Image (cartoon, rainbow, N blue to C red; front, top):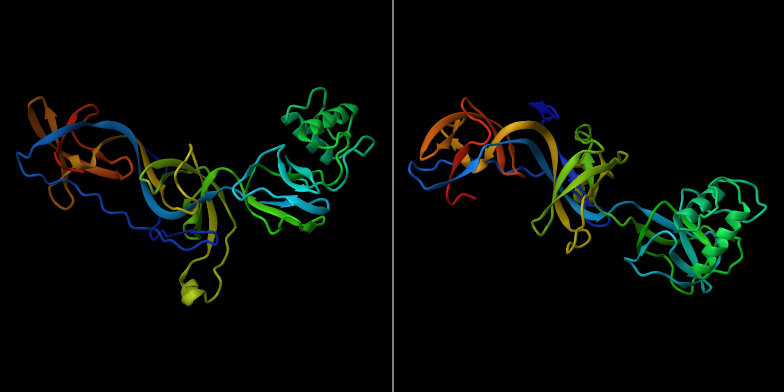
Length: 364
């Protein structure tokens, strides 16, 4: 029996984000798992004793949104002639917006553009960033990804410009591309079509494309939460999805006073982002979800369905092992109640994986 974590620190509290601004949601108490106390002779079915990993989880409410935060900043100037609609997903090589009838292409990179990219220019990291994008978009034949704007880079730029509906010059003037760190799902814009923009103006705001949950985690909980931890997310439609803690932000103190004086009772917290595995459909943005965070786990232990557990006294339990047409009472010691899997960890003399245990019919 291996423990993933030790016992949980008492008094765990977690607050979750709801809506765009974020609202507080506290740890919810889990309903206690109850053992069956079926009358002797009650009809029953059977289920196997299994060797499995079990986990104890605490639940927290959070809001379903998108991962990441992006700001598209204009490197050039002119009149805005087109903006994408809210919800539009803009990937590498796609138009981010339009200035005076010409598309401004979104490329991936950490560095914002600050000069024209052209033959004869001094070497630099911005050249390498452009060449990385050309290669990713399929225009990298003959291009060496380095910091030098070579003749191969020049011809690759011309091919890319032709296919993108841009003036074919082999030069990337300032304002023809914007660089962000990933795919952008447009959340809004502070501008309107017809507005004039200059260098440094925010054109669009957005998020990443992947669905994610953001929660504010109290500082007394943060030692229990780690990047890479697995979680189970319960969606409003009743389905469950696996998720992973992908980032933990900086701690922020709540504002003094707060609405109706509530902030004074709220602990300092840090934003935690949980990304989901698999596609999700039919769930609206900002929908409230429940996240089960593993706080203790045991691997390779014996477990039975929770309804198979029979309470003898407040602290003693048994299961009925079916041996053909006969049953025998086996006293068991209980461990973790895994509410998500619907099983409870058990151990007892004469109990082994593969045996069948009785479950009263009509139980959940």
